[in-house]
Amino acid sequence: MAKRFTDSDKWKKRWFRKLNNNEKVFWMYLLDQCDHAGIWEVDFELASYFCGKFFPHEIMNTFSKQFIEFDGGKRWFIKDFIEFQYGRLNEKNRAHLSAIQRLKKFNLLKYLDGAYKPLISPLQGAKDKDKDKDKVKDKEKRGKKEQLADINIDALITEFESVDVSGEFKKWQDWMLSKGKTYKNYNAAFKNWLRSDYVKTKEGNGIKKIKLICPEHHDITVHTERGTVKYCVKCRHLMKSESELALIKIQDNV
Image (cartoon, rainbow, N blue to C red; front, top):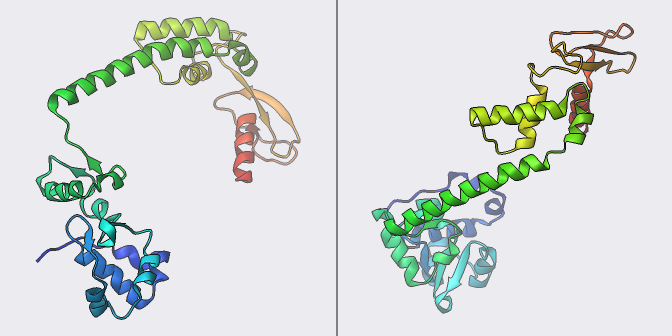
């Protein structure tokens, strides 16, 4: 006796809940009576015997999104059957071969939307992998040079006004070369470098300054970035940095 997976969550799905009782029974009958490739030999007379009275044209309209009619209307292919029962079909899996052959016979593999992995010869597979590796290497080589050239130093000087951005950019590039570092996003990596604790300010004390602001805008002062807690003298609210207040504003608007 053949056994199959069943979707126990179908009772919670809106489209299934809207079906009348006979249509619900028909859908379950269809999933049980189609073959192992999700193909049903259309027989409304037999289906009505088990599912109760219904009109074929109404059934076809109701389930039009769930099947593909072919072979002059003599057969239906249930769209999601393969993916639900097998996952992704693979010709290396013996349990999948019979279903794949059946689908090939009726030219139905094109409807699987990525749920089929064709068999590739070992030689072709090795060639494709080598090509992919070469593409990645070329992309990385071009990407680093182009990304470094695209870093807007002038904009960063404005953003990090207490840091010698031009000098740090040269130091950062030397550091990357010495360590063999590569990044997906060089602009973001350099900004993180500028935020790091060991980057000295123009004053040379090694401690960057930030502006702490009262959330109620009663007072503004400047303190060290780390280890500083300041409360507004007027409202006693914990003072925050500009970036923290901007984040709070974004969250409030979500």
